[in-house]
Length: 353
Image (cartoon, rainbow, N blue to C red; front, side):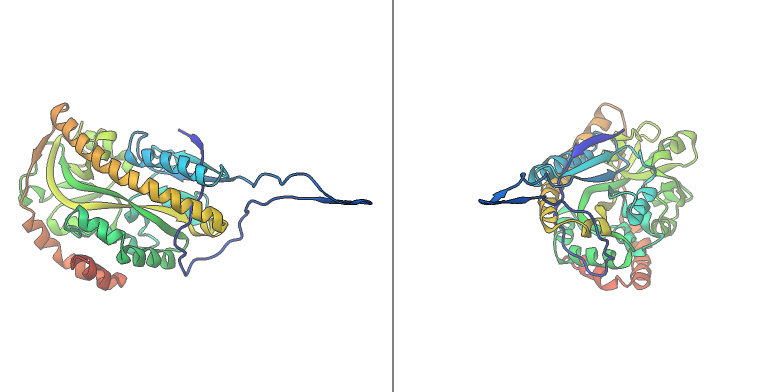
């Protein structure tokens, strides 16, 4: 489904280590004409050239991301006097999340909002936020992402990803385990449990350490995998569970809360660098407002989604002792930090900075 909308661009923190690409920017045309009596002005300046951007995501139209993209569209258009046209492709129209992120990296897609772990084939650092129980709570999550650590991580991704950059951080929902046949009541119920995961090496190691059997399945194929018995369950957040109706084949929720999601708004570096300073400034202003909406709507939608699924669709919720899961996954932190050079950043996050 296409949504054709005019959007303005915004300024994002300039990151070093990125390749440059000469882009087209708007200009004005003016002419002067000399006469025997002097010089008179020519025609008025032509309108600035319009720039078209494409943005993709895997979520339904009603999902908070697409609500926020509407805000991004409106505000950016307002701040840039309609100079930018953006086409939004929700519902995995452009393919699975890994394909979209690779397209942004290559430059055939301009922007996307995805689970960053789908990009680990070209940048292992993108798995950082899949470490379980990395954030103490939502306030800690905000403090980390909106502070120095979040900026440092943006710089690392820009330098090491080979073509993508992070404009801002969306997400904020807690992920829990869903099961098809019966509730997961303790860690023993996870032994040999076929758990659908995004194709992430780190996520596989985390859940293998717990005792589960990870199964890599694309987001758009997950519903059928649950319904057919290809997997015993999945882990996801409330907004996506409701909008994708995962509660239908998997009505048993276990409140692990093992991850507070980080879903970056990615952009192709060359495309960003081709923008004029004015358009970068307009985009940053619009992104700031859209990010506030994305986060607030995701919190609200998550609460409403959970209530609706329990009260109207009959899902059950089960609490679980998280301590055994945390204990089994501790070694993963050290291994991941050493392999990616992110040990200091992980320690700063865990210290509560």
